[in-house]
Length: 257
Image 1 (cartoon, rainbow, N blue to C red):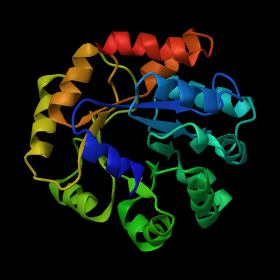
Image 2 (image 1 turned 180 degrees about the horizontal axis):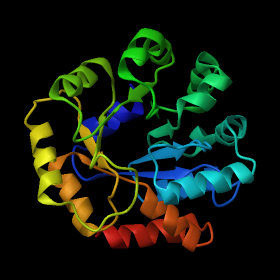
Image 3 (image 1 turned 45 degrees about the vertical axis):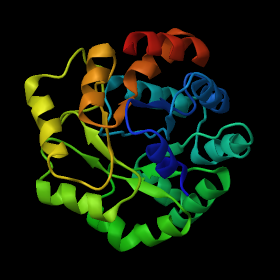
């Protein structure tokens, strides 16, 4: 069974998934960050593939991607660094990145390397659902990979239900129709959106991402879904801590309460 499915069977509330960009702040720190997050009790990890034009990301993650690329990070390097990660890491791992570098690598070759490294899922924000179903789903499933799709407050109910039917793992519920970035709170409009999605009776669990950075936003996300995804705040802390992932995740968990 896919580790993402195992996680949601074992734990259906207050799941914490953390995103970081491979190659930032240092090129060689990917495996150490992953192990540090697991040791700190994080439930799932999203490993960012740096890209020169990350349209869904705010300035923090854009900056991390730029630094990672300057450090020489690439998909080939990521896979080399993850080659033996399953010797010590058992929690779900996803790769999150944009379609262009994946297609340049070759989608089947990419999926094959993901499977060899023990990657459980993919998040590709600029991959349209229809294109995924028509061109890529069979390949991803053949290699045991869940492709997780994002929904926003602007996503129609029909499309949300179609994503629920056509994808696996969980649904990434973006808190607002904006780029990534830490926020202090979620207003009533956003919480009404969370409640509406919950009313649709979807099959897959949801995690809330974009803006989760403190106790208030984490609690709001967890009250509306199975948990939360933290990205920008952890990336900022990792930089502030000079790449010390153990210190960064301790500070994050203190902030989340």
